[in-house]
Length: 365
Image 1 (cartoon, helix red, strand yellow):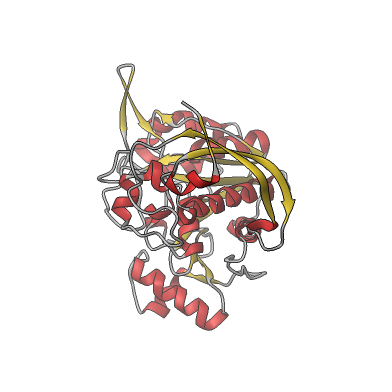
Image 2: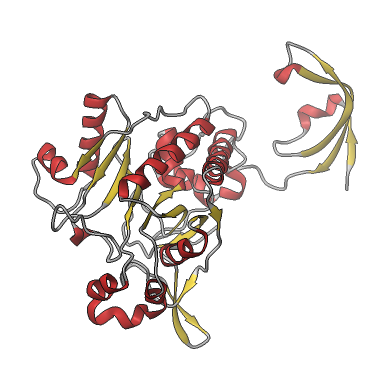
């Protein structure tokens, strides 16, 4: 039952008591926010039955990550945790604004699909009315098809990976900021759009925003191998850290494009580099020594897809039908939202920037 309380009762109200305060608002330079309420009456709307799992009023988070995640529905009331997700919201708004201003159309594609996007590995399989189906690993196939409709598209939505790695950078479900654009020359056109999008997202962060160079430095994968003294076909987390340090030392940039990954480590729809056999017109954007964005130019000729897929082409017949009817040269990218916020705020574990994480061990709350 709601009840009124006077000022003498306020100290007796327990933390997280819900109140309604009515009064006259006046300016006061000494008060928080520059205003205060005078002649106030207080109505208690709800009293808590339990105490929070830790003190929510403290300026820092006085609890370990497992405690925060186990009690997320209440823990997220802590100002620092709330702030992280407000920054995520502003980042998404900036992503949308940047692409809206560049002639993109927002789309919403299915998250239950008939075939896996990247490969048969790391997918969640479903029983879809007696037929096999999967949770979408990305909107890749749909956003490519929609380039043929709208020319430039983007999507903000969940993606799902049956990710077996229990690390600080992997989740089974995360929010992907996807974009795809047509009538490009090669992957460098995509990189130029991505740079501008990242700059707008950074500007929306506030005082902690990283500086995005007018031209983000870029090195080829073979050049990265030379820096790393490595012949591996892909970058390890340690490699990414070393390249991040190299970019900071040599270009004073926390961002670095690595281009031309080996085709063997890129999805089948990636366009090969015509000037360098075995390499691709693709890129990763590293931010503070961690892969933040993957993107590149796609194949757009029907015959090239048939050659790339070989005997597996039939299982992708719906996807291939798009290219049988003609498609422009196109490419795109995908940004992981939670990873972006974690790197911006220097949060060591991606779960610390995820509202309700889903990973190898966590299915609740």
